[in-house]
Image 1 (cartoon, rainbow, N blue to C red):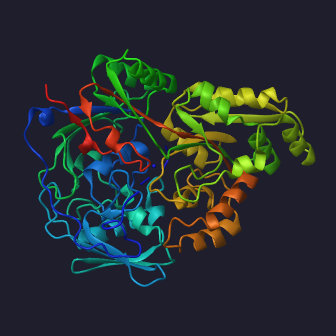
Image 2: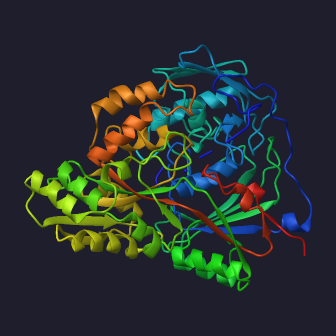
Image 3: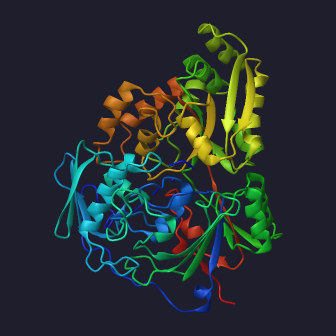
Length: 535
């Protein structure tokens, strides 16, 4: 997911090889108490347009969907193994990972009072596949050949083995929608959404100066129909979307919001943390792990960046340590593989292949491929937490070698930027990736198979036809196996160049609690964990 995932103990967690029956107990949403009834407002710059689960596939939409919809499975705080949510139990039937069965819990309801049944689960999956929105997450469910309801059971028949399916269903791609509300063949308007999660949407205000579709403010309240494990620490939550990081910080300073997600400009986040440590600030900063990563993506169909030698030379020149230190104020860490640290199977393939930045080695690569120097290169960006400083530093490093002549351009309109990379309009461009689930596969299949989500035109048959099919058969998701080979192939071909892995810095006012408990590598920010101390 452009611009994240999940650790767990056994018991309710062992879903791949074991049925975890009877683990989910019904808990009504909390009520009462001044500290809970006062609305908590959170800000983000992860703007979005579509909130319907069949068409929503970015950080800004999933931030909301993870709190308003249920899936069969979920990732509790700190977990990388999915556990039951709307399901009472789930398990693969047999050892070939081609049939997966879940039993839906009884008594579940959507926020409008309609019952949530196995038929709704089937409808949700079939609807997403039928709509097949090009900007939606239907690709995550591409291995599902058919799905059927048998009483309270939902049976998934897979076209190929997919041991990662439980994790995919636990993401917002597995959100269960009300078949009596959502049309079967088109997306539903944002203001008509109905889910069964801890919160219900009360109102949506459009972003000022926008096209009328992008939400600017979403007001939520506790869903009285919710039955699940999550105990709400607040009854009202407001999510505000900001176009710029400086606007987000200004809102925090003025008290318009109570907390900001990991969207603040890196120097700002670093200073807030330093001020907290020295007792100079009224704000608190929760620092934690994150699996969000940033890539420089290459259009492999372009006359310039289609040459592997050009991409390899850039990989040989890039100094990630300087980028992390000078541009991102150490709020990120250098990344040397498409799979980030903290995810099983991660290695340092790019460091192993290129070691330290070396202009001499880069020149040798280009001369060996008879590339005319200097290479004229266009770099495009749209959004970055460090703003223009990120791409300007990359330009500086490449040009300092004398091997490249770089032009930088910004496409500020995010939708236009997406259309541009899909159309092959850019040579190289920076994009963030927030994983859908905590598995190496989510950094491989969506990114480097058949052009991937960034539509860069690259595919390696050994990866797409052999290694990926082999890897997703493995029910033991901690095994490295094929993922090490895949990362090495990517490091050699460089269709994408990993830049860094984020650290999480969530800034909040002094009376806000619970942020630490929801900041983890899952990428799921849990509104219900956030509370306010009593005055």
